Length: 157
Image (cartoon, rainbow, N blue to C red):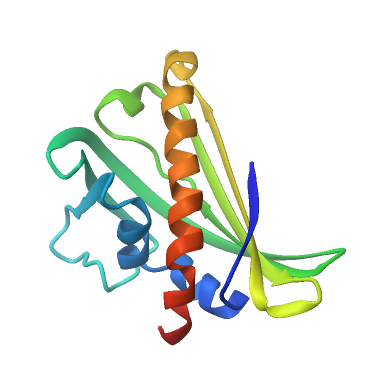
């Protein structure tokens, strides 16, 4: 699990979690996401949608179903809003995974409501998990750096 603070308020971070355009920005330029349905667009959030992933915009990595659901919990530091992606890789190397449970949680940083505590957890399982995990770990480190870098731009969205 990754846990880090970002320089934007929790409301803006929550909005960003639901934005396909922000998701594309987080992964880019390492991984590009192309929306597969004509009804889907990077500007419009839907509870579920499919994307084609490409390494550096060129090498196909497969298709991924993104299926989002929301929940809100209270913990010792206050209200925590959680987005859960229970979609699944449809094609490509990641499709060997039987379990894909990605949860992203945001809450105000205690004592500084202008900043957000971001928690990011991915649970995977499948026959190739030992082979895929190191690659996914690298991508998760990339995501953290990108999120920290671009989060301040979410304040105006």
